[in-house]
Image (cartoon, rainbow, N blue to C red; front, side, top):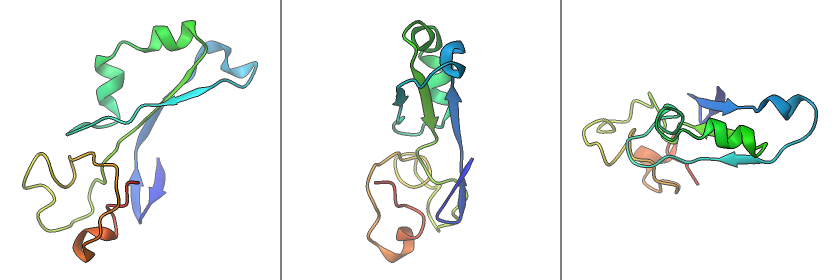
Length: 100
């Protein structure tokens, strides 16, 4: 986890066996609507391809969780499950929803 706007941001990382011997390229997968860091790892079947091609996978949860903003959990397509990659401009949202 890493700190972002006072919240804890969760992410997963897949390291191929060869990663200890040398530097490898990394692919950041940014999930979309209603997704967490687990969506890609559970559904994509990408670990074997990453291993075969010596690529590190970085899988962040792309939404703030637990910000406590009124209304953030009222709709699946806005707030904590949204997955928009932009910064909020309204004061109510701008402290935690800085996703750009």
